[in-house]
Image (cartoon, rainbow, N blue to C red; front, side, top):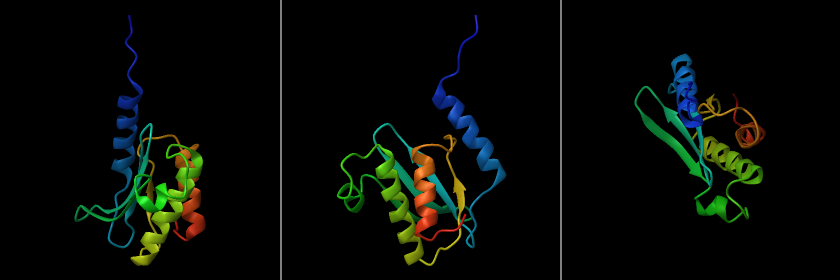
Amino acid sequence: MFKKESRSKIREKKHLKIRNRFSGTPERPRLSVFRSNSHMYAQIIDDTVGNTLVAASTLDKDVKGQVEFTDNIEAATVLGKVIAQKALDKGIKTVVFDRGGFIYHGKVQALAEAAREAGLEF
């Protein structure tokens, strides 16, 4: 009898494969996305030093005040705009997108497209 591997284990394996391909540098940091069942989190990370340069999530007051629910595409779009604005304020224009092993569809895609429209390049 075959045992089916859990989705979270599969996502973690995909994320490790993605992380082996690229990492954030001071010139082009990594935009890392994580989504749980109820919230989304985005960080811009410089992997050479291991510092988080910019962070935003749907738990933040500026994001939570703009949306009714924190787990839908609308919330992801607002989060993408907020993280892009924070990054541009810090002088970060180009990033590497790390989807965290999640499929580039739905909320992850909405966050990425909103960040691109707000001025981030990736």
